[in-house]
Length: 475
Figure 1 (cartoon, helix red, strand yellow):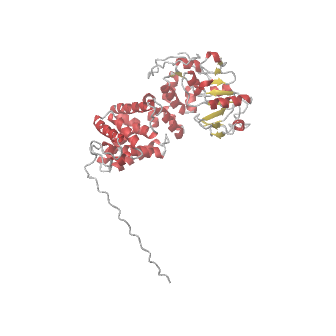
Figure 2: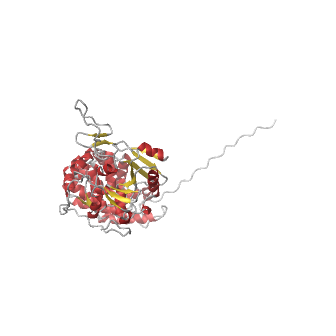
Figure 3: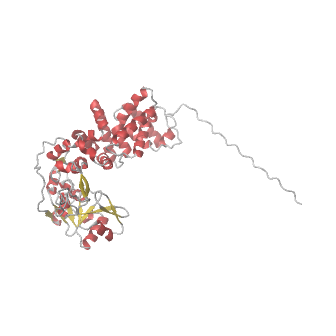
């Protein structure tokens, strides 16, 4: 693979290996070294590939005398020949200075104070260069020997970062990032690529390597474990063996991260076209059991259930490849639907009405996973509606098919029926019937009559008699 070419030839991706111990690169901790600078003629990044809004921001910062770099994943993807989803900018301008330069700037964030530039069709985030840890010129203890930490850089007793707003240099900012492949920068001043660690060589080797001690970096921010899995699956990379062992050891600490951040990261894992491989890595590493304990227990009870989920996840990936990505509710149905339906069926056999049993199982699931992953209530409600509509879709002669099709969750429910039809062939006929009915106009009766009821006669509306106003005789 060649990263430093001006042409736009595609880079052949390798297969994703699930056995990590067969790969033995040097995994010594990454230290601060002299930055490696790749001039414009030796790399493949072109300004034509960069968003016009991002270029406008870079040029203005540079014209006002500030350092302006493209940083993070966009540089990584440009070097790999991929199209970045967004463009992040790093600068030595403070958030207040950035706000003075751009009228469309809004300062956001608590842990990281960011400048969000809101254009008509895009949002560009600009961050001030930061450093990891407390600056050397600020004492960690006062004259009495007690720890003295500034409020803008805090860690808890376990080492997880709670606040991190210490400004620093471009090198310090690069070395505080999570992985070497995300510590690359593109300098708008001379159009060069700057590598402060081993990011360029790791891109060549397709390697996910944390910057520094993996155990320390995963402890500082447990979400980095999920990010390592996501980059490995979405880019067909290999996780460094030392990082993989630390990840497995610290998998149970993922619950210490913010539930809202975990929900966003879980969506990226399963809704961007690599759900199958992501699920395998989560299950193998122990992260799945830490995030969703009941799901891990349900899988361990019967090995055939894993194949059922694998088929559902394969379908999720196909939807993304077909440019029709699944909704969060459909993703939850694909992963948790089979276990919820089994439990609801057990309660129904004990005498509880079907919908009531399903509502109870869904409520119990949302209560459990909300301890680690915050799922919005509307998404949980839509999940329950998708599963509840399966009863109508499974009927050979459904009642009121038009009203069923008009339900807001019908499209997702029909897609879930397609999931189950791949493993249960008896549902294939019903799936075909609904597709045939959906292609017709709602007023047209399908070839197979949906119900035995005779059509009811339309009741005529009685006309209301007009009241005659008596005329007053003329005097």
